[in-house]
Image (cartoon, one colour):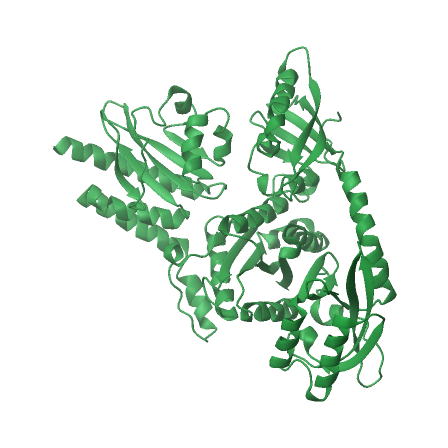
Length: 592
């Protein structure tokens, strides 16, 4: 196997001894996607895990340096593909180099190409700008732009429902109403090619009226009748086809995603529909520094490549637009629950981290992301936009390279006004300096008044670190939870040896432990990992508490659901807080 084959067309990368990825080419990061923070074992079919473990053990043997195995690994759709895995020991790193060769991929790509070839040929015979298809068997109608790799839906519903919606919202001019109704009836029953001319605002979500020529033909695909068609925009004065209608009006020329006008119009219509969706603001971190260091041409390449990453990750579950410089707006639907949404966000973030590694080296690219949800946070586009923008700002303040999904109970209630100054006031109200001042006040109160103030301290720390759990465990003989955030938090594992085993203690440095990814413990310390897993934790910090003789008498643990690095300021803040808590507990024990 070629060592460090970062330019390979197949997934290739370095993994530590837990088989967590430490670095690799873009293909490896894209392949792992939302599983990037999990050991490779988790992606392997259960029956093949022993085969992978045997390959690792074989590779570790002194007389061997590499191994090869055929295993099944999970793909992005939840199924399993067959891979030939090559693994060898690293000479400059305590771990392994792994290459993955997908032997199922070629067959699947041929099958996919064969299925779509006929439809692509038929669309080519009626080429134009906006496409649609109708399935008589289930009455489903879909009208969309094929924006390079991104499909942008204008309608995706039963034809009967779409027809009523167009008439109800006045998206067809009165004089052409009869023509539109005839068009819908012809699509339902047609047996031959037909063409209609009419005026309406179907393609601009009811905003602007244009002249259309609509051409459609019936076809059989896999024995099932389907009507496919094209919407062409006509110049009303000349009668000529407007070839660049979509690109000229709704696409960003550099990135080939929607421009600010296009994505804003799309987002407003999506929110008005009342469906569940997420409005996502994304900003490339330190972009000015990228331009200053590597030049504006490289900066433009970064923006265009980030747009490609977003499109690939969200697929048909969303639409992305560039709203300025290095800032993007993403509208996602059908993302599932919050966990599903986090998987998409994490995949976007990780894939951006992996871009241009050979050029930027240790200055890895990163992004900050803010998210609002409809209708959970609001059912108005402007409010959702402001909320997502505030969440993005908080992500920047909390250390960048992270995402924040807005929650009122965690981030506070927003005051919405029609004034532009409202956004400025929101930003000024959530500087980290304010958070720090409030925490310092509470710490000072705790020094003066004792541990009765500790719940307020833990709550403020959770706000600053965006933590889901903070717990203080203390006791000379028997460990007890003396304070927790939230107050309803219940930990049953309060044994004396809980998180205090000899092997676990070795992870601490000066009583402090930072765990960026709890999955690093999964195979080496399964008992401790299981506690984190049940709590839904992704990352954690812990600090031991000691009595006057220096014996461990408990610890403080803070956990976040996301897998992410803690900023240096957050680590220092937590460490100082724990020392103050330790001092207060010792003082109160001595006063008894």
